[in-house]
Length: 114
Length: 109
Image (cartoon, rainbow over all chains, first blue to last red; front, side, top):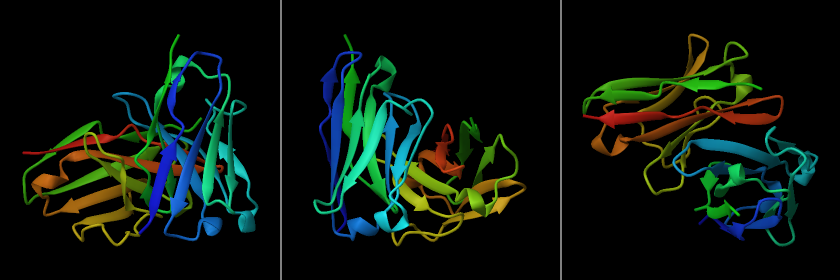
């Protein structure tokens, strides 16, 4: 059974940093392109970024609002995806989901507020 | 910055057929945009219905189908069931980055 479990969400102040993790199981993580998606309260889905598998280059792509502030990485030895978020803004408040090839986690809430 | 446009809301009767569309501000949507469709019900995580235009994960009911229609990506529901009432999102890829549409709230009435 495929499982994606996000963790690391919480309350932070504007300008602070936060790191999220996504633990994957039930599939060959190292072959998967992994994506982060977020959803602000009461709003639609927003694509945050993606990391390709190492065999496909391991490169990353980001949405314009987070480029330069967020970094996606992966540790294939731990079957874990990461999202490092720096210089957080109030508009980054959202539930953050990780996703891979049709599967989604349940999300973790990040609240940025003073 | 690409803008992806969906109908904000649609209403369909049980047993009916409805088509949701997904347009790109950059022009006609093709298979190179790898259109994906997702369903989200209140309080739940999204669920993938369609990937790469018309492919379905094993859990997607046969009444859902994806296609390209008139320069847009399309999601057609045939024989709509009450449980299909949900928010539907499309996702297009352009230049390596993904962009979601604003979502279509489908009401089954």
